[in-house]
Every structure is written in structure tokens, then in C-alpha cells.
Image 1 (cartoon, helix red, strand yellow):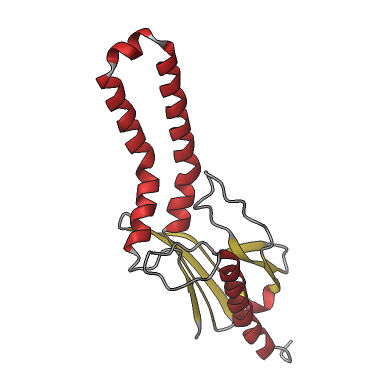
Image 2 (cartoon, helix red, strand yellow):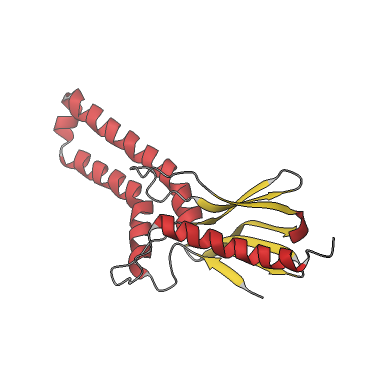
Length: 194
């Protein structure tokens, strides 16, 4: 039984985990810094509206950043996706290990004969300030019922000693090919057993 595992952060990637945790807790650090600045310069903030407005805008940006990147970091960067075929059934499980708590996010099983199409996700990802950790699933599986399953995140966070030079697009294509080959191998066994 062949199993395909995808995870953005490898087990031994301490640099990537540290950077991801810093990005996750960054809003709390920024709020603590704003409180420290206000406590040092109370006179300026009591009498002048410009620093108050500046701190207000700063806090609004911090809160917005937190709520837009937090789900991507927790459910994308700390996730592990596993898929395999056993007894002609395709199994998929997505789990996350965040702060030592392991939780299953998504899990399903589909009989291979029900799968009608396996497509590569063609959606381009625009990298911006709020989408640095945004996951993009590289495989879309369609069933006879018309249900589409988007699986296998192509995000990968390397470390400073990392020898892997694979880009995100190359990783997406490789993952797609592996999943398609896994399913098609079982489908081709059933060609004459309709």
C-alpha cells in the first residue's frame, strides 16, 4: 500500500516552526509594544489626537492581520495530509499538530470507482502581506455525484540548511502526479470488472 504524505513543515524543521510561531504570535507582541509605548509617553497620548489615531490604526492593522493569517497558519502550516488507497477505497486525512495538540481537520473515503476526474488546481496564488501562509490545494477530485474535493496543500516552508530547491508550482505538479498515479493504478486494475 503506497501512502502519500504532505506537510509544509518537516518534523525536524525548527527554523520554519519558529518563524511560523513568531508570525502567529506577532499581533500579541505588537499589542504589548503599543501598550509599552503608551505607558512611557502618557503625556503625548493624553493631549494629542494624532498619536491616538496612529495607535488606533496600528492596532486595527494588527487585529486584521491576526484574523486573516491565523487560520492559514494553524490549518495550513501545521497540517499534515495523508492519502492512500486500500481495498479499492481512496482514504484521505488532514490533521494538524499545533502547540502539541493533534486534531483531525478533514477526513473522507471514496470508492475509487466513484472518482470520475482528477484535476490539477489551476488557481494561481497571489502572494501578499496577508497570504504568506495561505494554503492552496494542488489536487481536485470529482465524483459521480458532482462533489469536488480539494486536497493536498502545496505550501512548504524550508529551513536555512534545506537542500530542496523545489518551487511551490513544481511541488504542486509533483503532488498532483503522485495522487493521480495512485488512483489511476487502482482504476486501471478494475478496467475489465465493470
